Image (cartoon, rainbow, N blue to C red; front, side):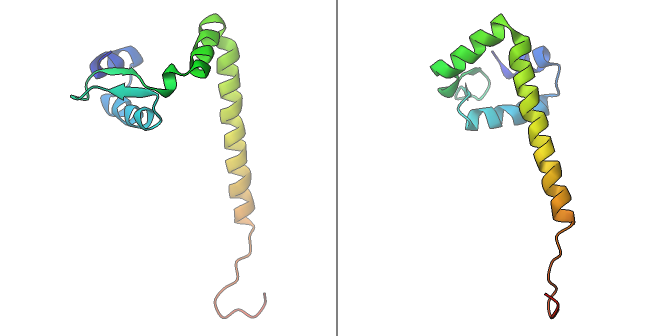
Length: 99
């Protein structure tokens, strides 16, 4: 599939697709041809675990999307809790003798 086809199919801006492809390529999930126009599955995406996940997605998207959503929500909760905790840290100031 070409980058242009991905833009049309995803209904995303070309810059968003290009940025996503860079990350996916770094993760070995996709590979781009020498002209960096055609996109194919990368080495990791051809792994049996990824193939099993895609088969499950084809069978029951709800299960996969629910799991991905749960992971995303848990990450957000974790980041929020960390930011909240950081807000209450008392940092020692230079020259402060109180501790």
